[in-house]
Image 1 (tube, rainbow, N blue to C red):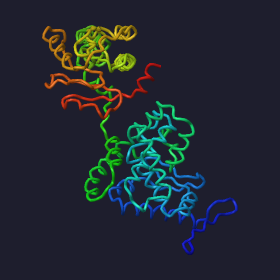
Image 2: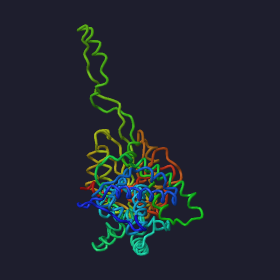
Image 3: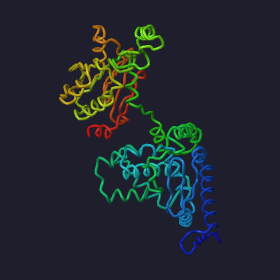
Image 4: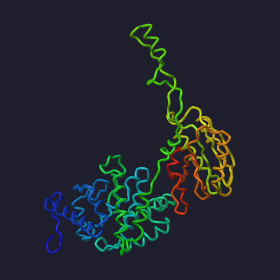
Length: 442
C-alpha cells in the first residue's frame, strides 16, 4: 500500500504477484486478530479452520474446516472498504458456529443459502461493532426487519420454511441473495468428509454460548446470536434410535451358527471317533421390538395426512427383519380428549394394511392422560408381556400426565413450535421434519 491506497499488481494473465498474495494473507490474518480482539468469545472458532489461498476461485468459500479465499478477491474487497474482509471472515466463521453446513444436504440449496446468510448478517448487525460495519448496513436492517415479520423470526428454519411455503417471487429471492451473501457454500452440498465434523463444532458452539454470558455483561449484543445458538444446539433425537429402546430379548426362529446341538455332537464322536456331527440350533436370542403402543392425537389440529406420514415412517423403520419379531403385539390408539379406537397389530403386514386403510377418528379437544390410563388398564388385564414403550404423535397442545409410567415415552412432533409446552422431564422428544415425512410417502 502506498499513501493509504492499495495497488494491486498482476501479470499479463491477470494473476496477482507473490507480494500481493502475501498482502492478502496479511489482511486475512489481521482481520482474524481484529475479530478476536473485539469478540474474544470467537477465539476458538477462528483458530480451528485452515486458512487457504485458492487463486482464481473469485470468492471466499466456506467449509467446516476451511476458509478458502481468492487473494485477488480479498484485495479488491479491502480496496472497496478496509472493514470488508473482516466482515466476510466473521460471516463465514459464524456459519460454522451456527452449524449451517451440517443441515444443508437435505434441503433446497438456494433457499437454505438465503436463510442462513440472512441469519448470519442479522447476528453480525446486532453486535453493533463498528470494525465490521459497512455502508449498506442500514439497508440490510430494513430488509431483515421485513423478512423477520414475514417469517415470524430470524432463525434458519423459520426463514427457510417461509421461503419454501410461500412461493416468494424470483425478484425478491435474488434481492435477498445479493444483499446477504458474503461467501460461497457450494462445498456444503457435496458428500465430503470434513476434518472438523458437527460434533466438534457443537463443542465449540457450546463453549461460545457459555462465554457469551460473561462477554455480554454491560454490552448490547442483541438476541439474534443467543437465539440462533440455542436453535443450533437444540438436542435433536434420532427417532430410529429411540425405537431401539423398545427392543426386548426373545427367541427368534433362525439358524444360529454360533451354537449347536451337543447330542448330535457327542453322538458323532462315538460313531465316527474324531468326526462330530454339528446341527445348528433353529433359534437364537435376539433383541427385537415386540410389545409397544402407538398413540395418535386425532384432535382437530392434527391432519390425517401428517398422521399417515408418521405411521408410514414408523412402518419403514420397523419393517426391517432385524428390528421386528415375526409375531408382535402393537396397539395403535386414536385419542383426542378420550380414546376413540384401539387397533391391535400382530404382524408387520397388518401394520401396512392398517396404514393403507387408515380412517381418522376424533376431532375433539386434546388430552394425553386418557391414553396412559387406558394402557394401565390393558396391562392389568395382561395384554402385554413386556411393554417397553409408547410413542405419542401429537402437535403438543394438550394436557400431559403428571406421573411417570414405568415404560419409556416418546412424544413425536412435526417441526419446532415456540408456543408448544415442554414435554415432561421423564419423557423423550422427537422432532420430525415435514419434508422428510413427505419423502417417505414417495
